[in-house]
Length: 283
Image (tube, rainbow, N blue to C red; front, side, top):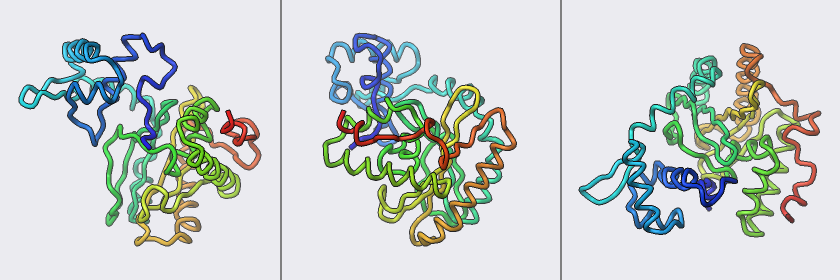
């Protein structure tokens, strides 16, 4: 299942030209860097004429590039002008970077920060440790919301509607499986301050994740440490790497108290709580 949602999945009116244009742009990814009109029609479900009109307009704006040699499209470089002001609003990246790199080198792992968008989770900072064999994604790459510790703690921290959107997209068996994993993650957060995942995304990969909520605007950031299973044991993940990541996050939050709120999952009954996930699934 593709956990990412196109603009067609949001609450924007389906007739909105803006929503459809965003849907075109969001069809691209690291695995789909070039797409033809036919492929865009298949991905978005839009009529061929609408896709032709929107791709022309997006190319005029510099947000899309036509590649005449093979008749496909690629995202335009003008999109990059939108990135700096977004990242500038996340000072935790700069404050945490040195400590993230130290932990990445210690654990021979990858330390990341991902930001929630309401319907997605995307990387905004990545530190690769010396000796780490974990695939390094690009900033802006989307994460799985169901198979990663990052995605699960994000769903628990985000508002209930976002969680329900994901649950409603799954068949009964997959929904039941995810509900069980969310319950596990909720208990791990309450008991240890972090959630962990061993092998659900890939049998050779495991990781721990901690959510932080920005005090001012409610932006959710997820700190994660991902390591290959042949470079650390599950006991090391839970007993050493997880606590080290927790200490890192607490230190960052203490440095920027006006920016970050550490969630006390052991006592919290509202923020990110899941009082009756089974009822959400039934809905």
